[in-house]
Image (cartoon, rainbow, N blue to C red; front, side):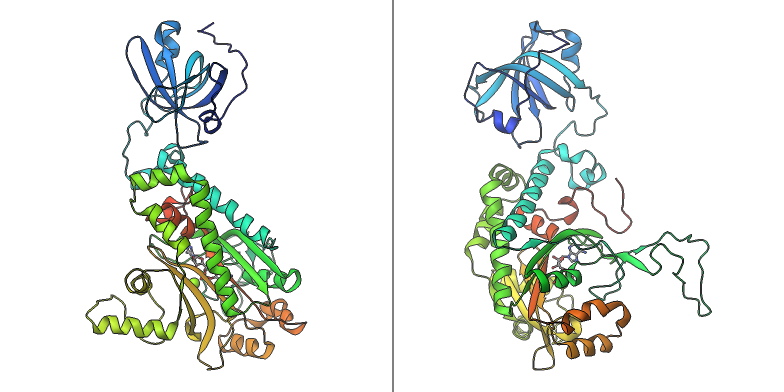
Length: 473
Ligand code: 4AD
Ligand code: MG
C-alpha cells in the first residue's frame, strides 16, 4: 500500500491549517511543490510548500517503502500529493510533520527549473515573473498584497462607504496631465484625418477619442454626491515615461470620495485609513512580515509599528518650502531647485519626512499651478486645498483634495487651463444641481504594499509590472 499509484482518497488539508493541528496519528493529505529534499539512504526529508503560508511542511519518507521511480521524481519544483500520518515533530521550528504512506507525483520538474538554488537577485526574479510567486519572498509579498486589499474593503465597509465601480475606458483626463493610453479599434495604418491633419474618430469604436482611465475620481464624485460616501478600488493607467522605483504604467488605486467633508476631516480620514491598513498587516501577516524583516529589512516591523503609533505632521506647503530653504542654507544639497511654486521632488519630500520631522507628513495648501483643476481654491487666490501624504522610504503615498464645489469658480479654472469643456458637462452638472462641499483622495495601492513589505522597487509588489518598454507576461 505504500507504493500506491492509485492513491487512497483523503481530503486535502492546506499547510497553513495543518501546522496548527495536534490530532497526531490521523491520515492527512497535502498537495504542494517540493522546495528541498535531503536525507540518507534510509530516510528522506522533503519540504513541501503549497502557498497557503510561508511555512513548509516536512514529509518524512522511509525510502525502503517507496519505488525508485517515484523517489527519483521528488525533485525541487515538482508537484506532489502526499498521504501520510500527521506526527508531532521533534525538529526545531516546526510543530507537525507527515510520515509519508503514499506519494503521487502530479507534475515532474527537471533541472532546467530556474528556482533550484536560493539567493537569486530581485532583477533576475523579475525576468521570471511567471515563476517568482513560488519563492518565499514573493509568496510573502502577494499574501500581504491580498491582505491589504481585504483591509481596504473592511475599513470602508465598516464606515458605511459603498464600493462604487468607475469605468476603465473613459473620454476624460481626470488629472489633465495628458498621460493617457488610447483605446481604439481603428486601423493605425489607414487613419482618417481632417484638413488640419487631426484624426477623425467618428468611425472609431466609441465614435470619439477614448483612453484608459488615470483615475476614477470624477465618476467617484458623481457617486459621492448621491450615495454620500463611496470608494473605488481598481486599475488605473498612466503613460508617463518615468522609469523610477515608484512608478508603474498600470497600478491600482483606492479612491474614497465623501460628501460634506472639509480639509481637517479629510486629513483625519487619510491618517486613520493608512494606520488601519498597517495595523491589519501587523495583525494578519505576522509570519510573512517576520520573514521579510529577517531577510530584507531589519527595521521593517519597527517602522510599521512606529507609523501606527505616531501622529502625522500637518504641514502647509509654504511652511514646507521654508524648511527646505533653511536646509539648503544649512548646507544640505538637493538635485532639484526649491522655491515657492516648485513641484516638490521625491528628494524634498523624503528630506521632510525622513530627516526633518522623522514622521509621516500631510502637506496641504499647494500653489494652484502645480495641482489639478478640481481642487478647492483658497481665499488667498494662490493656493488650493490639496493634501499629499508623504511617507518614509516612499514619498507620496496619497494625493487628494477638497473639491471646488462652486460652479463659477470651477468653470473659470477649467477655462483658464483650456480643458475641453464639452467633455466635462456631466461633471459640471454636479455643481449645478444641489452642489455640496466634498472631497476625497487616491492612495496608490502598490505604494502602500511597498511600504508594508519594505521592498524598494514597485516592480516587486505587483505580480506582472507594466513599465516603459516592458509588458512581458
Ligand atoms: O496624486 P494622484 O495623481 O491623484 C489622483 O489621481 C487623484 N485623482 C486622486 C483623488 O483625489 N481621488 O495619484 C494618487 C496616488 C499617488 O499619491 C500615488 O500613491 C499613486 O496614486 N500613483 C502611482 N502609483 C504608481 N505608479 C504611478 N505611476 C502612480 N501615479 C500615482
Ligand atoms: Mg499626486
